[in-house]
Image 1 (cartoon, rainbow, N blue to C red):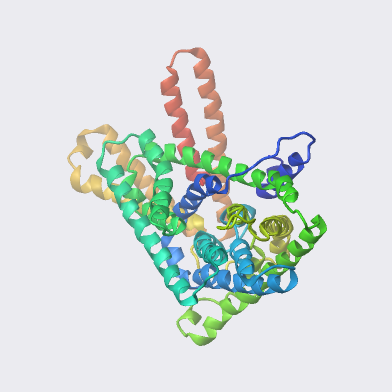
Image 2: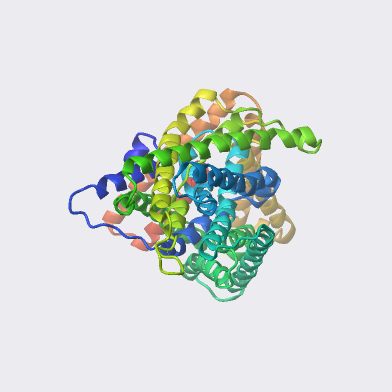
Amino acid sequence: MLAQRIKIAYPIFLVIAGLGISFIPNIPQLHLDPELIFLIFLPPLLYEAAWYTSWNDFWKWKRPISLLAFGLVFFTSMVVAYATSSIIPGFTLALGFLLGGIVSPPDAVAAATVLKGMNVPKRVMTILEGESLVNDASSLIVFKFALLAILTGTFSMQEAVGQFFLVAGMGIVVGLVGAHIMYVIHRFLPTTPAIDAALTVMTPYILFLAAEHFHFSGVMAVVSGGLFMSYRAHEVFQTGSTRMNMLGVWTTMIFVMNALVFVLIGLELPEIINGLGDYSIADGIKYGLIVSTIVIVLRFLWVYPAAHVPRWLSAKVRKDPSPGWKGPLIISWAGMRGVVSLATALSIPLLMTDGTNFPQRNMIVFITFVVIFVTLVFQGLSLPFVLKLIKLEEIDNLIPEEEQQVGIQLRLNNIALQLLNERYAAYLSENELVKFYKSNLETDIRNMGLQLHSLECKESQQRDIEVYHKILLDTYTLQRKELFLLRKEQFFSDEEIRKAELQLDLNELKITGTGH
């Protein structure tokens, strides 16, 4: 709440709060099971992110998303591997790749939360959200191969590349098969809004566990399943009560999970410090700052060529407006690390197969924490100021939101009017309610035509719409107070008053558009 009041993204506050709580004397030390972190938090957070990702936008910007989610992850892992193996005593190249796989993916939640409510171009948000959906899979695959190389002492690049495509590809297959099964359950079995909501909470866990059981990518399974279910949502969830119920369940659940995750990052620090062993905290901070600088700089070095080189090589790419220097700057600066990196670091086994301690485990975990803290707090706090400073504007030719909303409603009203005229014409002369409904539709269609015209015209006419919306919102506020008085009078039942209140809420949502 304090973060909202002073307009700072709440993950930053929660990490610092967790850190502060962990230093209170006699606070019990927290030990996180990384497997549980992966299982409990990762599937629903990724599924929700996939649900609100537009497949059309995701596919349109697949090139920059792929270059970041795969190319940048591998590039970062490689540079971090060679850099750390040369500057940290006792660090091998395999350990460097292990650390690279851990710190290479930006967090799905952090960037979206920091940028929420800011005037960020749609292309930039789509690329950032698309990247954070897929990059966990590529980074976890790098991590697993590096871990295998350390535990077994053998590594084959050819085998690793082949396994990567198999693990990621089959993860997508498992996700799509599982999503089709859930689609059939939702669509053809007698569900209620509560059952539908419960099934949507179960779906990401089912997809994740099914893929991991076969040693495929659980992340890719959840993302592909989420994108599919989101695309078919209008067929699956056909009633308003189901969608409203789901919205309430998921909004609350994801908020609580995000909050817990970021507090847990801060709370974990004392255990990480205690495990440093031979190294001093100063050494850990020094190496952590070096790795943080490397991952921040590498993102800049990758993003600008990735944004502009394809334009030089392809006439097709040049058809889209140039990203310039401002969009890539925000994409570069929004590379904040989060819970996936910490959970991955903590999942490093304590012992080798021969029973000896895993080499450099505590240093790797500490460096990871420093990278998360630096990128989340330093970049997260400065990102809004960078946005204001460069005055980033929309570069693509997009239809304004208000115009789209009015256009959609106009189409829906025309369909309704067409239905009345074609199928229910007989009732128009004898049924007063149907006649009244038709008259309302015709009035709405005329008003929306004027509204569309005004949206395309002067700012003064747009102010008229804002005043109109303000009057409606004030009216709904007054009507809610009246409902409260009706409840006190005890003449109408609470159930009917709640229905009237829900209708006011729905009317308000049409104007405010706040849901996700």
